[in-house]
Amino acid sequence: MHLHLDVSTPPEVTDAPWLVLGHSLGTSSALWTEVRALLADRFRTVAWDLPGHGRSAPAPGPFTVGDLADALVDGLRERGIDDFRYAGVSLGGTVGIDLAVRHADRARAVTVISSGISVDAPGAWVERADAVVSGGTDQLVAGSLERWFAPTTHARRPSRVAELIAALRAADDASYAFACRALAAYDATGGLGAVDVPLLAVWGEHDRLVPEPKSAELAAAVRHGSLASVSGAAHAAPLEQPEAVADLLDTFPSPRSKGTSS
Image (cartoon, rainbow, N blue to C red; front, side, top):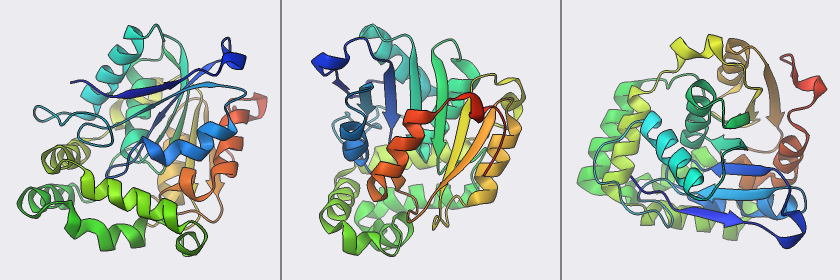
């Protein structure tokens, strides 16, 4: 599996730490555009696209969350990036959890936004996969507009909302369905107790898909878990509140991040 990696290395930050960014299902790495700009003087960033999303080629066949994490690590290694911080949203966040479990020698700190230890109602994800295979992603637009964004985001950021919806419509149907099945099978419960990587679990104030209890459960399951929320955001926090998300990434991990807090 080959993932497209967009690497940003401004000349003034050639020795800065690497920050790798993963997006949510149905969107693209453009979710992180403003956050990357806000952190450009402090981090070298890599934003990657899920299979069949953004600029990544369609998936050649079914894959798991672990397959995504392995492909990402391989792609980073090819570019000489072996030590990095990671932040991901939703499915991109589950990849971050897997990195913390299985690639702790590379992922030095992980921020998980709007992701939990496992998904609710795995059967519903299988049903969504089947629906997309038969009818495409256009049928998901209305529900995504409601679930992804806080009530004020549509008015404040209409062009960016439209950009993410366009990414959903453009996503490869088969790859989207494979991703749904990967989420349905995903459950990180067994490996979290040994995770020694600092992990920040973040939820959006208006996120109905992954509300506070899911993030709190994740933060409590690891040795060095922390908890934070983003006001005025739902499931697409980096787009909805880029300044708040950039601040979280800029200050984590820190000495105050050792325990779980809200």
